[in-house]
Length: 106
Image (cartoon, rainbow, N blue to C red):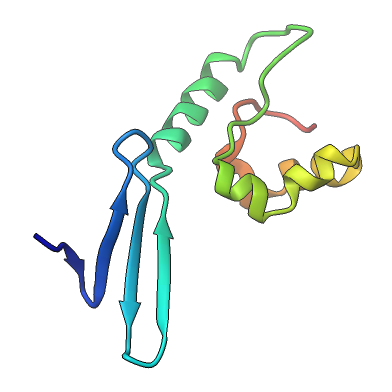
């Protein structure tokens, strides 16, 4: 049984991560789409931010970021290269607030 989302055909589903891989073709060219569910991560991050709001510890988790975003945003590369300024700028950007698990600035 084939599963479709419009013209997209489901190629692969990973039940552990929820990742789906879809394929669409116009008989000339094929295109793949990879979907990652992130709503649970965002909900957990918000709960962590609320739980740690009043804690003042030496160590605190500051973010939980899906691997595809970590790699595609160059965040992993910047971290590996020790570019703490770029990493801090990325984490403090309001567009990336969903991945933060604590308030304040890095």
